[in-house]
Length: 457
Image (cartoon, rainbow, N blue to C red; front, side, top):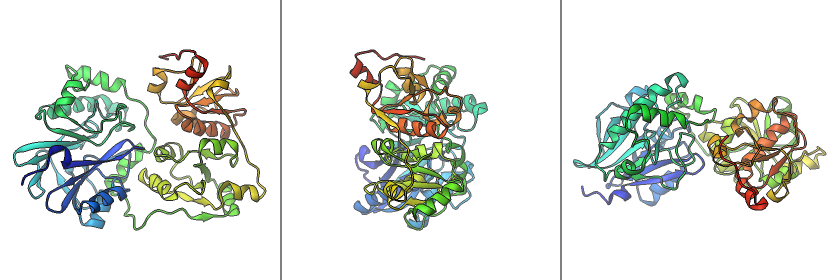
């Protein structure tokens, strides 16, 4: 079989919200291989359909912690054969692979390479055309400019797995320089991917530029990797087992049940929470008291799963022009299946029923003045540059720290305003008053005031 040019063999389908890539590989005979698909397979199916491909194989590089895998779904819907590590002990039908096992894809071959570190059972998949390796699906081992985190199995195993990750990267670095690197995790992923636009690379480029791949020894590698591990969403701790058992088969697109005001109020009285997905300006102008803001955007699912317990029923409030299907798929992708429904008529219906609204301030950088600031960005963002004297609490830690935070009329800030409004809504739920949200971020403050940002802690 004469394979197409290397770069056209694997087409990444990028989830900008989760920072991950799935891959579609044209096998040249009307069939396709899919690697690391999420449970929302709509874009994969569209791309395969446009190319006239039937999905025959689906491979998972590891037991994913950051999204529900679509492998079992594609097996059910398309008859695809699931390829995965035998050591993962998946509880559904699949072909279990061990190190150096090969799968004939009908001309191309897929070779499993044991690459533990991100997880114990992690496999990379080397794609070969005859004897020539053309690309490697590296999952959560070698990623562009870095390597994926090794602390998902607990702090007591982080260093051990980091040393395993070092050995795995050295194994991959021994591949020829021309071999394409097709990682799952990329910019925006909480699996320790650095910022950057590149989703794929080559072995040669990574050997030249990846600081972790260039570590002179295991000790240096471990110190560099572990020293840069940030926080990660709470749902990471439960999705691995869901993926091992096999996510439930989705028989139709997820939908939001309609709820009238009385039904919504009854749910709230019974412990449900309102998640308001409207834009920042809409939420700050008026919202249901106690509502948590989480503006609908590609990162909606991440913050829903991070901040809302999966056992807590959720009542959605949205604007009519916001996509309920996108919202529901994002929730399902991170394993949040407790959306009780949406308030029919939205905030207007709530007002029309005679119920009060709450509000938050919204200020621009030029009018921040000397008000105290809470910066809710990730630690690495804050350390790089922040407004002097800003109190730093990551958004994911706000529920834990809100009660102990000094009661002051804070302006809450992030990079643009979306995370800030979520944090402000959580602080309001915890009894803080006089809050405002900054429309913008540190760069806007520096530009508006002419003052310099501060680096470090």
